[in-house]
Length: 407
Image (cartoon, rainbow, N blue to C red; front, side, top):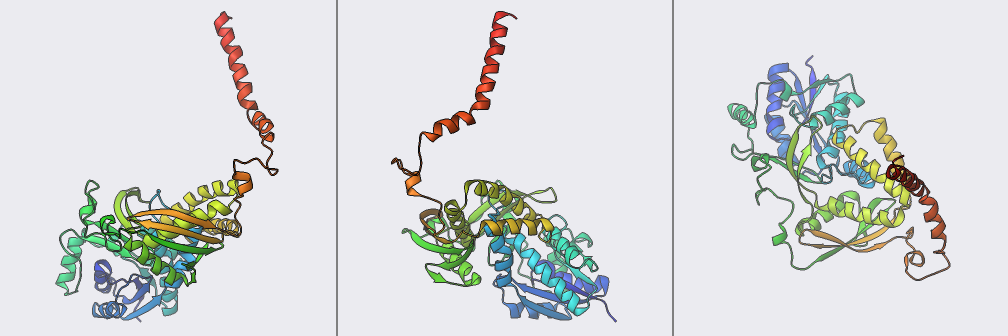
């Protein structure tokens, strides 16, 4: 009986040549698992291509709802952004794909799982850590770490020799990853950080120059930190993100150009388009500014940094991430309300924040004196706060007097 391997299959250059490579080098029956996380591919065409390149079976899984509800929205509630800019679109998609890949492998009685990640990137960690956490008994095959192909040009040559149709070009090759949350771009002119992205590189959003000359307003509603409506209309997660991607993209929102630190220690340059995610993150932060108590808000910023790092490093299936989710969930119990944003040529400004759980009180924040806050109390508070400073100042004065007197 032939051994089986489940390959995370996209139909792109790498996974297209991995199917025949696995058959040639391992004599595996290759089961291609196609995960739909909103990349917008023609699924029928991808399935047809997988069979044409030698897959013995193709399994298609619709992960869009799960991707947003169980991976993206928890990161949104946490406020997770890697190195100030990256909203973790690819990083968040990998664990849900790997989870389904493992499920298929166990259902099909497969011996191994395989992926098309290079040995230089973060994705190999994200996939393989998930495999180990969910089914450590499965063998892991990573062709990029085994074969003698060294570049995308080599991969193209390999495909052409086997008559495998591909869309990648030999000149200015871009590596792209798209899902509901974002679209990433690497390679081509972007390999040199001195080069600006080409106008043709961006695909989800228009340039600020091409955006409307009139501002667009959009209102986003949240319940316990989770987005539930756009412009007053309740929607499911997929519809919300799709609508906000469209609105944000038309207004040049969500473009990011970043030189980031990969987990393996390499700096890489990439461009990301996250129009809907940028709007959701901005609105969520503004709602938290109303609803979170000061110490919780400040400590949550620390949690956000660690959460983003865990996601980026591929450590989703860990006790720490689960514990952080529990903390974040508790902070979000009263983060409900609406935020209205104004979009104009790549810029996002806040027009309105409203919540039934708002801690903002005009009688306290106003310059007008009132009964709720006796300003005379501040004198004692500040004096106690300044006790260490006064003690230190007095000590310094004594020391300086000793030096001045020569003692």
